[in-house]
Length: 593
Image (tube, rainbow, N blue to C red; front, side, top):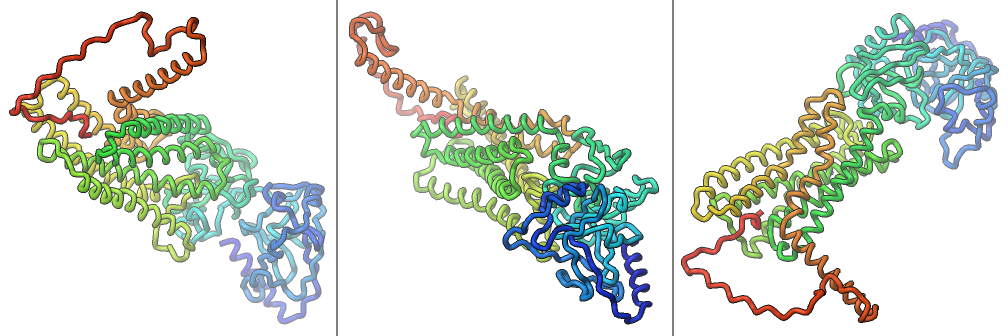
């Protein structure tokens, strides 16, 4: 409350002066009247006098006018933004005569100008700087570096915390964060305000303040899942963050993401694995489309939707992993919303597949549907598996785009605030892992029921006795296990258990390569290989015909479709004997799934 006490004392002093008329007062502006400080000049912590003078540029069209935060001690209140005291006279181009100037970005609001004498009061200090020791301009102020020493900083005001996008009222959390920061400071002064960043006012969480080590000059040594990392003095601040325990360290977005869990090598490995998995998912789709006879199968249609949704989601996730910090914020937010919808859709289609398999084996024998019934059920599946994710993802995107005041009682996803996904654990639990966990439990129940029906029902029937049919049933069960999302289950466990990121590299890579396993189960089938061989043979024969037409008939080698010797035609095989009328027609089990 040091900031408030300082302002109150100044108010009393001014009120004691009575209603004396104030003399004209020159207040320094950094740049001439027809220019202002360039935005990039406010994205560094310090500037030399020469560089500050060279940073004045003509304003951009529709650029905001200078509207400093002015406090009137006589009224004990802040003036309306843009309203300047009547006795002020602006002194344009009045840089303070200091060798090094410290930058105070206005968006961090660490200072205010006093209406009575034009001095500048920095939040967290007890003395104000006279007009000769500072200048103010659009976007920030420049002060003599020796007058404002670098100190540990709480990001928001005394009674405010951070919700991922704005400083909000949180007296209890703010007090705890301030106390933890003062313990780390060990008696040194603690200020308020955000660091100056090259990216502008874009910050991200770098880790927990607990366990960090303070070094000389205000640098901070962080320890966490991503390994130790060092943040320079003035490049970080600490704050209570909604949904997190203990004070968190917030830093410039680039620095925070650079020390993220796993580092660039982990992101590159995970992105490459996702790209490989997406390629195998595309091969699975191609294998399915190469078999026109399978297009009528309801399970095949559900599988196609599932694989397509998962493939597109993997492609987007691979792009975010490989792009890293180079991803623009707007693009990052759009991709996060699309990934949310696609991955949810994949799980819902997985649920329809499990239900469809369970329905097929519910009475211990394969069943077939008429085309009309099959089309009707597919439409119901589509409404469910595309519509439900659209509602969930759409609600999250809508809450994210509404003003924070209108969504005070709701948990927003906060896409792309920290990375191209949800903001934190609470958000990902409510909007993603929660629905996914319910679906996985339902799928597990369906899987147990289906396996019981297969083992306790079909295995005891006389029709299922041959080795080939037993192998087919084994393949069906193996397909169910993979399709049920074992890899996603491992990902959920790694998220829930937490711990150092390197402990879960194997599960992350397993999850990234899920497309490979799906291809081995669903795409790499004997009938798919047969279709590929027929296509290769047709291509080879076509090339052979072209070669024979272009080359001399006496010198060319036989193509792969020709014989090296003349042969006579083999007699036609005898027709197969008709099946006894009492023998029931049996459907290969592999075609059902």
